[in-house]
Image (cartoon, rainbow, N blue to C red; front, side):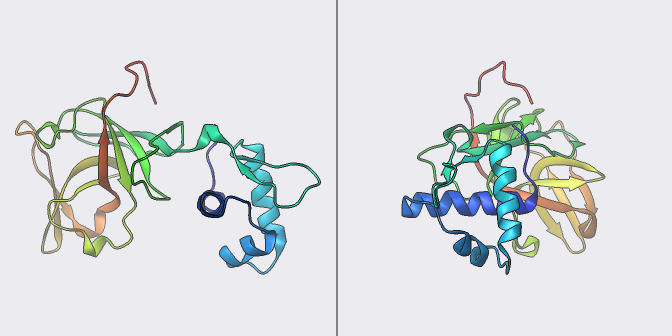
Length: 204
């Protein structure tokens, strides 16, 4: 399924929550207010993209009939993350993980783990980690497991701050602690949960 732009994802996430809470679709005017837009044109454009990409559908000629398609509910799997050294940054949505019943928030995403540097934190090669975007990197607690982008790659490690330096610590004594100037570390998400049980033939 084709990935969404930031603006399309914002509207899609809002639609999912609105329809879930109200059991009906919103009006264009309500969407305009929610997205802080003064014109209906951007909303209509985003809705068309969401429909063409297979995320929503509606009955032609009838107002307020938008429906979220069942096959895209869940958490988007954005790619792989290295529990070892670093790999290329994740980019495209390639699958969605159905986590009905778990306390997942809008914006949460999943990454498939490659490597064994976090095995003592009960994260194994092949697991899928559920991550939550970090709004305030300065507020990250010591020892939080994060997805951190460094040197144009992304790694899963325990976060520690030492003055102007950040240490990314593995949970496997075979691997060294990684240390970088704080301004070179982009924390892209914090660990929410670990999902074990993905089909062994699943690839991203």
